[in-house]
Image (tube, rainbow, N blue to C red; front, top):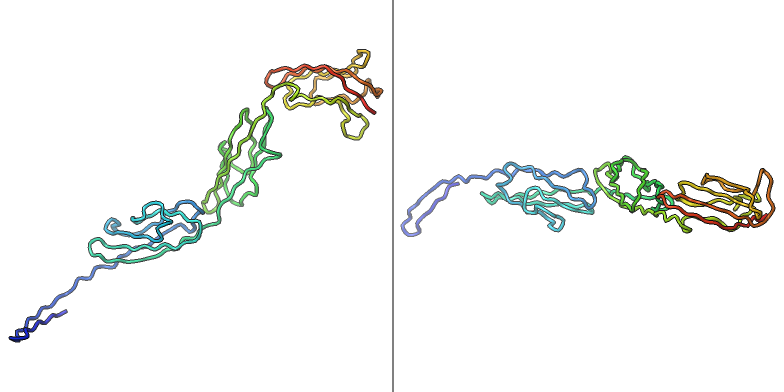
Length: 277
């Protein structure tokens, strides 16, 4: 460019040529993962030479959780969002604006279930499983196991967690507490009916000791004259109302049980049961 200055009175003329120096373009690119995870932090990366030679202004600010004035902010979004950045050269004041779109992946979802519920009796095990598992996802349990099903056994109330990681790398966690009913080894834990009907209808046909906690059992039944008509040490075996293969008459029969529970406690009971036909 040439500048000419002329004096209005004397007509003197002065000329000067100047060549302005153009600042180079601010060259940079923006990168994000292909998909953002729902409500999980992710970093937008600014690829630029000498990043400390510039200032950065990002919009919208309300989704930025860290680094809002730097080249690589951390953002947290739950829906698709476009981010704008204005980069300013500290030395020249020149600016350049660019944008990048962030796409949110469908959220990972995980839910632990058990049947019939999350309680067990002392000494029992329980299968925990994933409700509606995601194809291709990885499930990591707090026990160190992987997969959609695990079997747990515990003597105390225990918390179990699982973390799912889907094909997008997005994660979700669920937690359940398995409660344990301890053996008291008393009448609340050991049950016998006061009557039974061995008529072959598969309903109350057998007089049996019922408990979740039996380790050892002595079970004897007597008729009204004190004759032993049945005995067993097998907790899974009950009396079918027969003696030496013959059906006994309806009557009241005496019984004796001695139970050693899984915790070592003992329970003894004597009583009567009515055989009904």
